[in-house]
Amino acid sequence: MEEGVRRWVVDISKWDPQPYEFSFALSLLPSQEHSSVTRYYTFYSLNLVIQINGFLTFTFARFFKMEDRKRALISRMLQYALLYDLVKINKPFFSQHNFIIQRTSQAKPFLDLLDYDKLGLTFPNFNFNVSHHGDYVAIASEPLCLVGIDIVSFDMPQGETVAEFIQFFSSYFSTLEWENIVNAGTSNDVLIQFYRYWSLKEAYVKAMGSGLIEGLNKVEFSHTNWTNISATMDGKVMALWRFWLIELGERHCAAIARGPPTSADISYKSTLKKVDFTEDEYNIGLHLPNVDFVEQSVEQLVLILQKAFDSEPRG
Image (cartoon, rainbow, N blue to C red; front, side):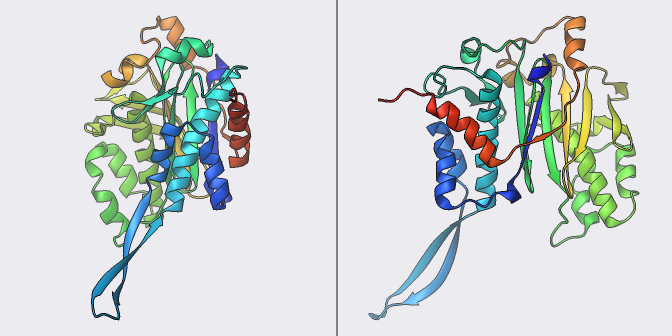
């Protein structure tokens, strides 16, 4: 089952596409994914114009947030490229499996069960999760356990102090976690400590597919220099979960959560291939190695997707 444990990451700061390059990459995705990428626009009012006839008119210009569009595009490219790379099918991909990736009401992506058997996957409960923030977009997959991933960029807050910024989130941390955060040292140390704890909590929530963060103060994380990470819920050890924190480049980190399918939110649980496993079966999945991130370039993703695209019948 180890083949189903994947960790891929893309540094979007290394990709500065021309419009035609962006459009070509987008064209390699199923058409229903396009609007989720192209929706990132913002509108600005420009100058008041006085026409010769004396009437006043306003002109507007539309600018898109390219960084947001890049993240959205690469997130979806990663999902389809990873699936295609795992399946390695020799039959038409997008034509026969046009809706292979769906999303729950909480926006967690999943592999449509109707297509699962057609794809020939041998994993008992394949699932995946994506995240993007700052310079990075990443995907993590698991063959049996739930998986959640969350990337954070250690961005300094704008217009407020670090203390003011983190105070808004204080109710989501246990007393011990909050003490570790506020006593971390300099403002920068405090910010980094905050983001690391927050990413672990987000990865946990995303693994379950719930989208809810209420009651997160009851989930307390412990660690040894951010290794050997464990968690308790209301003081009870969460023995069926494992967590990792990985540094990504400069001022970024990624948290990964691996947990039991029985903990999935009801809307996500219905999408899973299998929920109930014996203790021995589950332990095999829980203790699979957490593999290193493999950095992929956008060009590599394009090649994978183009191969899938070229396998479609023409005419």
